[in-house]
Image (cartoon, rainbow, N blue to C red; front, side, top):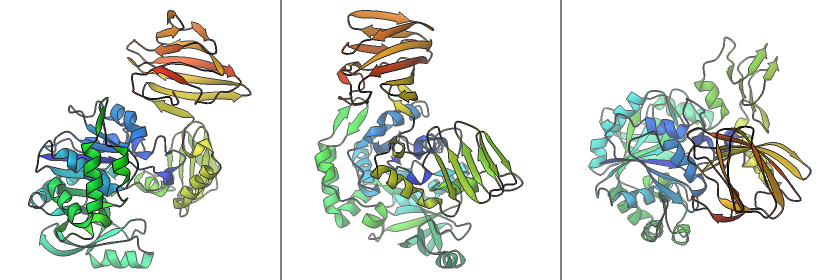
Length: 472
């Protein structure tokens, strides 16, 4: 059985300010109508697959579940990493779980944040490599390079077994421009896509030979795993004992059974903003824009607006990205360094480093509209059928005004039903809960007032999502 394994643990800091730790690039619609995670799932349609296994950060579990809810008839299995340990342990968790489904399961390992323009070519490459993989070869997909790219690692191919399938000779790091050009000219180097096709039992056998400590930690973590709603939580203490390493370094550089399948499918890892400029449809001056953008006398820019009008006059070779709470401007050949900006923001504990102004929760989202001295105004969106936790606050009161939809409210001992233009007041220290029992989204304006408005002023009594005392 072919089982897709979607790796969704990345942060995507090079795409700040749109990609942030709380909602990184795989959950964003950067290159298509759906998010990159959704597009990865859709890429599988037409292949004969079992239901996917998604390995992700525990903080993103509800995002993954929500985004994949309607993408396939088969619900994915979602494994929650207690902490990031790179790709080799993540794949090991999926391989160990897959043995329960099929002892000889064939894993198609796909990062959830890549872009592919030719799905049919991608699927043909998977099918072409399957026979080798089923025979025990650990296949990686090497993208036939279209130019000398310094932002990607490369794989060097050995002997060609048959058209498009090669022996794996070695992985090489990101080269300088001269070396990259040599790689492309030689015809034996492909871009390292980070995608793999391998039998689960063969992968675990290679881990046993080359990374026994990692395998032991992952085996123990899955033995002691527990179910949390629809999620699988490997044991944290056991998993944290695993070394952190990529599959490239942990296995593929040591195995004697590696292979490469040539891939021509319009692939990009969307690793930084210039990738979206390259993928986009530019105007006559080479500008690629998204959102409300007006340019004059400008050339070869990428400009993205998410919340307001952005204009540019006489600019060239820039990346400009605007969100509701941050603007990033950088030279196109330097914006790989935007991760340094994120690091600087983290050092001074700026919320813009990790959170958007709009924050997603399992029940929906909230957005801060106005923040002042001892007051704050938020817009809450509660999805149909969803309910917030039963909670109280020690330091703030809340006033809820329904804008649209129907709200079911618990306020102390009272049970209220509120429609548009109706409101209620929640005093400090009173237990309360907001629910949407309807079929349309519920929009509520929340006005908070009090001496402290932090998200940690929440005491939970009941929560359908299994969350402990943490921000709502």
